[in-house]
Every structure is written in C-alpha cells, then in structure tokens.
Amino acid sequence: MASDERNRDESAINWSSPEVAERRNRGRARRGAIQGPATEMMLDLAEVRTGSRVLDVAAGTGDQTILAAQRVGPTGYVLATDISVSMLKLAADAAQEAGLTNVETHVMDAANIDLDQDSFDAAICQLGFFLFSNPVDVLRAMRRVVRPEGKVAALVFSTAEKNPYQGIALGAVRDFGSKGPPLFALSESHVLESAFRESGLRNVAVHAVSFNRHFSSAAEIIQRLKETAFLQAPFEKLEDAAREQAWTEIERQFRPLERPNGVDIPGEFLIAVGTK
Image (tube, rainbow, N blue to C red; front, top):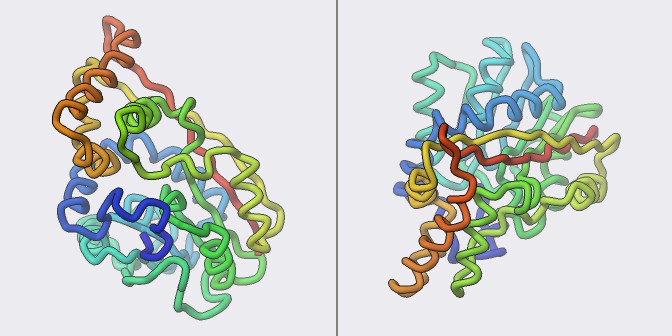
C-alpha cells in the first residue's frame, strides 16, 4: 500500500502501523474464505501459471501473494511490494510458514515502481486501489513493468449497495459526522474500466464476482466490524455518545437480516484485467 496515493483521506487509517498489520493478520483465515475464489479468478485472468513472474502491488499481509506463489511454483517468482514494513514482514512470515522460497518483499511506493521495464509476466493488486489518489498513475506504473502481452489485473469492491457489510457501517459513520476510507472509489464497472483504458492497457474487461459472509447474529457482525481496520480511525473521531449511537444504528440495520441459522450478508467484487 503506497504513500502519496493515500491522499484521499490521510487521517483514515495508518496502514503502516504494526497494530493495523497485526489486526489484518488475525483476519487472514476469514478473508481467505471470503476472498479466495475471487483471488483465484484474478490470477486466472492475469494468466498466472507455473513459472510466471508476478508483481503484487499494495500486497499488505500477502494473502494473494501466497496464492500466486503456490500457483507459479518453484520455477516462478512473486515480488510483494508495499510501503508498510510491518505488513510485508507478516507477508514474508506467511510465505515462510507455507514453505515457499519463491517470494520476495520490497518496500515500495505503488505510484513509483522502481523496477525494470518488461520484467514481469503479470502485475496484480487486490483491494488496494481505493487507497490511490491517482489509480491511473499506478496502473501505468504496473503496465510499464510487465512484458508486452503481459497482464495487469486488480480486484476492488463493487458498490456500497452491493456490499452492505461495509456500506452500512460507513454510511452510519458518515451520518454521525465522521469520514471513512473511500472503499468504493472504483465501485462502478465503467469507472474501473475507464481507468484501465486510460493507463494504456488493451483488451480491458471487468468481471463481477458475488460472494457471501455468514455470521451467527447481528451482534457478531458488530463484533467483527469493531475489529476491522477501516473503521478504527473514523469511529475514534466521533464523540463517545455519537460513537455508541452509530453502533446502535448499524446493529439496527442488520437485525432484520437475522434468520434462525444466522445472518448472510451478500457482497460483490469487481475484477479488471488488461493487456500491455
């Protein structure tokens, strides 16, 4: 996750902090269950295969790094980049625990990728584009380092309406006078497609991928949301009374979705891919 591309809301989340990194790491298994199929589809679209060289931009704690490295095998290579030393340390640890020797990490700004031109088969970015003040600049940087006919692929959230887990929470934060990160900055497929085309990529396509989150109750949803990084800073900026009212409102909106077997919350990702 890069530095100057965070100008959309500089005060929202300190992604470089060890605390945020650890919080992200604790959610690795749950994220894998939710995001795994879409990540595999992103890797398919990017034509990541045995022996591929892959650049992972805004890699965070490396969920998708691990999947890419397992796919490319020992003859392939994955470079995970981020500006957060703490995040990359956890990504490297995860790779080591998985017995992978084909992963490297490098602290690097996504808008200024200091790597050789035409040196990768594919460049990917999973759920990092909302952080970038100019996504087109990042896409151009990713395009530069992939070989001719190489692929650039990104996974983002679709609209707030199609992602009520985050949408309801961020809506309540906004209604009570705070501001959350722009998770849905590229949520419309035509906006995402336009950014890819403007970067110079060809044969651009955008795919919608539905998924589901299951919780035992609305109370569990609140517990999970309180542990998520993207809500920490926005809620801290609220006065105590407003903070409690906001949580009450969020739970009120989720309670009608409760069923005897729990709560199922739909979601949707968009995956864009383009060719150099």
